Image 1 (tube, rainbow, N blue to C red):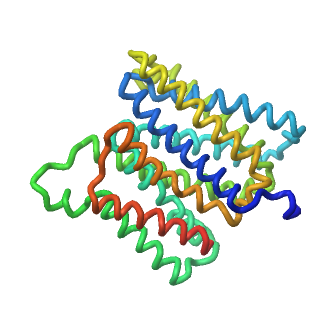
Image 2: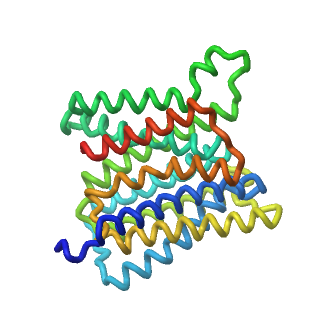
Image 3: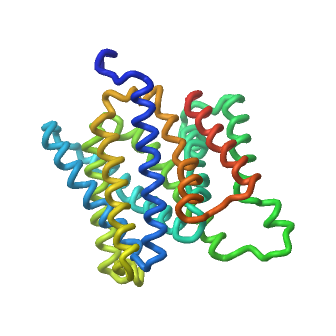
Length: 301
């Protein structure tokens, strides 16, 4: 696309920063909704359903083709299932541990993607990239307060451990989803790919809810704050997702995408202001190291 059609750099960065804040706000709203007995699957269904309607309108407005080859359909179905698992895991993490903590652990996905790409025959990480990965992992050790939990007198909380495991699973699954997107579905229009992905998420969430395998997964909020939070969750996620794909051709994503990594920082600030979730000084330092490292890694890639 010709450079004259691109937003000025400061406008593109501002839009991406607002999108990142909206995604972070979606997770804050999710925590409030879960604290008022909202079912996890209900939150996923509402979020995917409303966003899917917006993407359907975008795809039909642009008159984009939905013709996919048999092999492409297979990869697209797998991508949708992976994103459904990732959504389930990150919401499960947010329900158990501070939002910023969950988002920072999920931010390991670029490291896992680089390692997965290398394992599947891609380029090996450079020494510089390995050094940045080591820096990110060091920051994560501080974020998780590993020394304090290993040598402290208090036993590790089961909810904390479950939340971290859900976050790690979300990071791993998202790394695989990114690899599929980059290597098997890169020729598919982003709006079409996202629309089909959310369709699979919607169907998978509905099937799991109907099966009864997750008791309370479709529970309605028990109080008005839960309903308000559920509505905010849907609006924030839908607005961020739709804005991203409507504006993407003008955002120069190749150069500006690292701005999106401010989501965990926004989650840290919102978690403190809205939920009263306070991280220790070393955890905050570790979080900044993680985010800084991920941004460096993104620029190097």
